[in-house]
Length: 290
Image 1: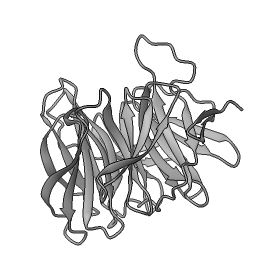
Image 2: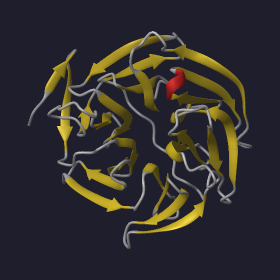
Image 3: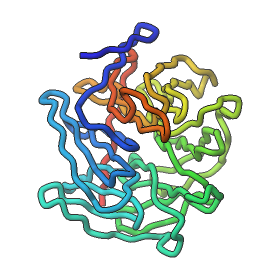
């Protein structure tokens, strides 16, 4: 098995699937869920058996999460959908941007109360997208607007803080979060990465409330401590488009990283799913409760 060693952290490609643009990894029980946006696919990877499953949902899919009642929920070109892995069929929930042909849904995650937060991307690269919340009663609420490319979103252990990335802004934002009502307030920037040529993309959090952020066009995942306000770790990868990350494995100590293909550039390992063990431990992900 090929291994790339960087700062004593071994970075290893796993599985055989090559994504056009892998994104949205999330650990679900004993396997990893993720998407290949441009190939219209939802995927699972089972580390113990090395089994990979692939479903084509017929459109670009930006995020997928498990549903507590069974099945999955995904969001893409035409809004939010339920998904049945056994039949391969999707059932439409709703699309708050059905009149915006240049927008599609991108990254998302469930909050500690089981609501699905997912944002859109404006393909014209204008601030015409937004962050939405799919409530457990299937009501869709706009939460934050004037977004260009909605990406990483995660919550602190005490649920009091929500972290969020609008990629072109190059800013990691924090909001006060009310888990009971889903209200967000007191928007502030905790890290401005404008000096970096690459851009913050997908994000996860560890058991010490440190943020692990993949940088697209940057060949790296960095660990940022919001308390110390500094980067405490950087993991380099052998391909440019490192897109998102999630902790998984039986002890949530394996960091899985999705990647994509950079147009016009040939890289041997681009598009592969990677895993490494950076010495941190993740927290269990939340399923959609509706």
